[in-house]
Every structure is written in structure tokens, then in C-alpha cells.
Image (cartoon, rainbow, N blue to C red; front, side, top):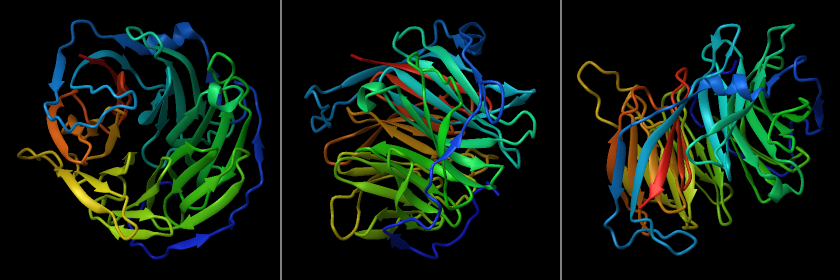
Length: 410
């Protein structure tokens, strides 16, 4: 059972070891057999990429003198955003996958896909964004066994570039595996051209029904998993080093000072071993909820309760600093379509908010944790997830794939 089911928080247990097996489980095969299909044909892959000419541009100016500064010390006071490309979803035997997650790392974007309902069928795209005007799709993998027709859904993806790992780029995925009817985390090593190649991997079977989020930090992999799951911490060999049990673990983020977990139904923030705070929202059992850290602030997408920013530096509880409401529901619309699904923040404090049918909102986060709404971009479809950095915004739109926007600092 892969879907997220609404359950109250029933347990919270910190375990120094792991009660699930933590041995390495190699998954071998070649690009056209076993449990995945790999496509590295640049000509056919880039038929899925469409350039957008003469699209409107949107300029946002931050006039707040207290704006967060980047690590270089320069303040990005004005940005222009323009849609430059569409990336259509991959398909397998006429089954179209839906974009579920994106991770931007250096000059590459990694896009995760899954399938709605009882079907297990996921994938990963690798997009080269080193040339700003022409993103290129360079590798694609579908997780399906062609003989059994059983597959894996991918809920979240993470990557670390070769310069950080003293070898080829590593990619981690999490989601639900039909063959074990359970959550999983898996590590792949790309070749020197940032492509999937052999299908060789190291897999870890997670507690819970579906993996929901995955992050890499300080040589550790942090993974959340839903019902009967929690937060699993793996080492670089994909062996479990610790496990925190909780119901409905939705998202995790880590920086040099904090490891913060988001639980759902209702929304909870966890600073493991320090505090656990109910914060409301995130009550849709099928929806995605995301937490992202920026210095000492946690930005939390909470569905019907919009976006909330918490100061997490306290040893006693998180402090609510500012909020942005969920989008207004038009007459005749469903409130569950106009919800805050995701959030991403650049190092300069520009905040991008996935508001479902409400489109993409732009905001600014200042050094005191105050959110200022800047505007909205209507992308013509529901915005389910967003990932950004200083130069790019990738917007996932489910079955409609992705829209790729270029950010220019003025």
C-alpha cells in the first residue's frame, strides 16, 4: 500500500540502532532488463524538451533593507524570471508518469516521477543546465520490470556531485516498491557523463509504506517514510545508523546546525531529541508537504494553512515568525486544489511557493524571518512541487511535466 493514510501521531521513539535490516542489497541488471530501463539517446530524449520563445518575463524588486544576504555578501535586490522550456513527462507503453520532485545540484537538475493510484511506475530524468539558454535532457531511467510489470514509484530524489564524493555523481531515490509493498531508499552511481548506465545500485528497505523525502548532508542520507515509518539515517554504504519512529513523516531537511522533520495530520515539527511541536495544517493524507531550511528558519508548506516560517534556534520550541496564506479558492473551486504543496528558497532568500491550482507564488525572506509576498505566476496548470537555486526554478506539474524558468539577478 503506497498511499499516505491519515493517522494521528501515535508514537515517537528514538532508536540508536535500526530494527529493519540494514544489509546492502545489490540490484543488478543491464539498461534494458530487470528492474529499470535506461535511455541515454540524446536525440530521442530531447524531443521531450520544448523551447519557449517570447514568453513574458516577471520582475520582482525587494526594497527591504533588512534582506538576507547571500554567502558572497551581495544582496539580490531585484530578479527577473522568464519561462524558457517545457519538459514533458516520460511514458511507458502509453502510461504517462507524473512529475513529483526535483533536486538541483550544481549544473544538473534531477527530476523524479511516479504514478497515481495503485500503479507503481516511477522514473528519474537528468537535465544538464550548464548552458543557461538551452537545458538538455541527458539521461532517463524508468523503474519497471518488463517481465513482471511491477515497478517503483519515486517520491523524492537527492544527488551529490562528483567533486564532493571523490568519484562519479551519486543519486539517491525514495518511494514505494511494488515487489516488497513497502518503502525503500536506493543509491545509484552515474557515469562520468552524468548518465545512468548499468542499473547497479545499493538498496535499503525502509519501515513504512512509502518513502516521502530524502536529503544528503555530512556524508549521511536522511529519509522520511510514511505510515509505520519515521526518519531513517543511512551512511554512505546505505547502512542504517539511527531511526526515529513516527507516523506520517513527510519531509526532512538538514544544515550544519539543524536536522528538522515535518510530520503530518496534523502538521508537526520535530527537532529530534529536543522538541516536538504541533503546528497545524498538512491534513490531506494524499498530499505532499515539504520543509526547507534557510539558516535558522524552517519554511513549511502546510497545505490548507499555507506557508509558515519558524525560528528553530530555540531549545524549547519553534517560534512562528511569519506566514503566507494558502491561495484564495475561487467560486466553485475545491479548497483541496488551492493549497500550498511545496516551497523552495534560494541562498539569497528568494522564496518560491507551489500553490497547486493557485500557481507559483514569489516571496522574499529577510534576515529576521519575515516573509513578504512579491507576486504570482500563472503557469496554466496545478503547481505540485518547486525547486530553485540562484539561477533556476523548476516547477513540477504532475502529468504535464515541468516548466523550467530562468532567474536573472538585476
